[in-house]
Image (tube, rainbow, N blue to C red):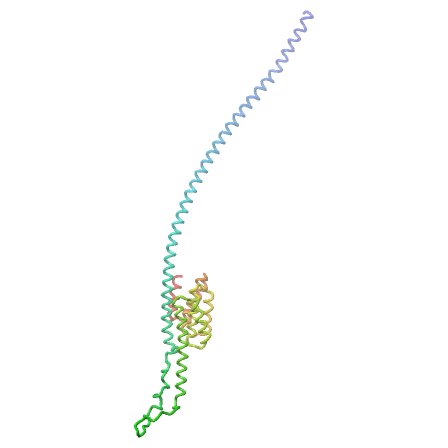
Amino acid sequence: MTRSAFPLRLGAAALVAVWLVALPARAALWDDEEARRRIEQTNLRVAQVQKQLEDRIAALELQLKNQGLVELFGQVEQLKTDVARLRGQIEVLNHESEQTQKRQRDLYIDLDSRLRRLEGGPGANVPPAASGAPGSGPAAAASPPVNPAGAATPAPVAAPGSAAGSTGAASSDAAAIEQRAYDVALDQFKAGNYAAAIASFNAFVKNYAKSPLAPSAHYWIGNSQFALKDYRAAIATQRQLIAAFPSNAKVPDALLNIATCQFELSDGTASRRTLEELIAKHPQSEAAVKARQRLAIR
């Protein structure tokens, strides 16, 4: 072999060695690109699947939301219908309540008149106003003497019993004034002028504290306060009546009025307790009959 051919062979051998070394590196490079491409494709498919899932979830949420709104709208419409029906029932009940209160007021007035007659209030047994007038009493038992000319002899200036007759007339006038004061207050209650009725009955109680009509005056003050929806004041007034006149015929009705006021104040327990007290203490009264009816429906 010549000396010039040796370097050529050596160069060729070096090229072959370089090519052999670079071949695996190139293959590795191709493998990395393929793996990267496949990863990208997988990521793309995952992204597509994820988007599809998100779209489906959004569609389901929208559907559920729409269904909820429809159901909610239906419930609102049903509530509107119920409210309208209840409003109509409330109007009917208010009307019936007003009519019932009017009937009760008339009944109370009628009962009050009957009780006053039974109790013998002022003016029930008042002696005639002319009891002391000339011609009555022992002085008038015999005919006056007649003078010979036929003229009647003048009567004595002060006949026996004339002082008692004057006292009876004064008592009759006082009783009439007392009765008129009571009737004025009661007429104001009948007319629905409850504030004026309260003022008039209060004045009556102050001026005629010992009157047989004083318990009734207390009772009508309480009823007037109830009509004005001043329930606490009505309860206090009726309790004053019960404390001051425990044996009066108005006491059962006063207890019934207290129970009604307590019910209006949403104190059902106290109302029931008062009704039970009414039945226990006054079982034969008309108010006890009403108390039993109320307890039966509560």
